[in-house]
Image (cartoon, rainbow, N blue to C red):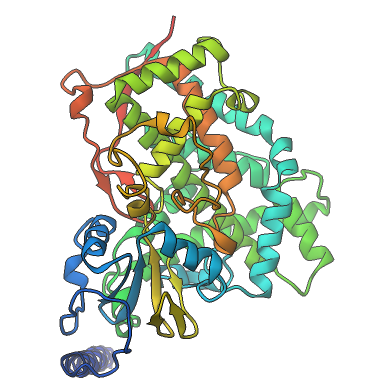
Length: 507
């Protein structure tokens, strides 16, 4: 009997596979026919490369899509259309076009094109990063802007940031005594993770340099890793149920681990019945208590996950690129260290009040963000209703990518656009806060990154403190001018080869 059940189960799975394969083959043949005949193409789309049957223009992306799209834009123009598998995509590659999309026609381009991975555990349905502009989204943004990233809240948490920077310096000091290298990106990631856990929960979720909280740290890392992987489902939605690369399954598993930890922390706080920590969790729970019909605990867990996902990688990546560029260009490193010694005093930790008196350090951070924006294509947007853009027709359902990387390296905007020259900002009023479309590493408009105020505070004090307390030595086999500056594309633009350097205490 058991054998028969096993046989029937095997046959059932085989039949299911054959049905799915047949449907997929039929879909591909229909799409191929339509592509050849030009059926379904919208007239007056922006110019772009010729589509191939089935794959569209996927073969043109390569492993560095931001670079490939920048090169294609030089041929087809700053507003360019492609077919990425089944998805019509428009790529914006100039400051003028970016201003149109992100500011002047912001409402028309404000929806999100959410990758399949972020639909795990219905995260996209509750996340401030992926929700459309709606009542829930406005409520979550209001909580972020008014309570978490407001000047008042950031000032109140300044001691936490100082504490975490001191822990980072202590870790590097220990490495210097044993002549060990420090993986700058990893160390910065751990520092950012624990800063956020203290800001949100008033406690360390992990011990940043030991195994305590390893499950949480690993789960967050795996979520970021899978979210960054190219996913066939995003180009061919018909594959959604099959999940051929297993990305949705892994995301679901790791998100469940993280969300269960959040559940425990929320339940612990609710059991006490007291909201005395005045941290992010208190703010959110008080809001739900006073406004029970607007959002619920599921929204809060997704919001916290967004904060961890966005606030760790972007900060650590920017810091690593800034350090790498300084080591790659020793004259800029010398200038930065001289300014720190003169203003702060050699061997001291940089405070937030110091940053206003450190213009060259601020220019270093801006220049790192210009050349290496954390999200090179920002987060994808979607057009929910057909819209006109500079005389072109952008059809409903189109994915819209803004190539912030290309704009930051546009030679018509920037002199010596590929060189690391912090000095270019000394006499410039350009900023990264979304008003100057020459420099939009955090985006602009209503969907600008809400964590921008925290990032612009955290990166300078981490970078300044690392520079002011240590001399940093590359592997003797590597010269400054030959330091590998290759990037690895993902949701964030990381260094392909991690920056591992040995700190020496400044005497």
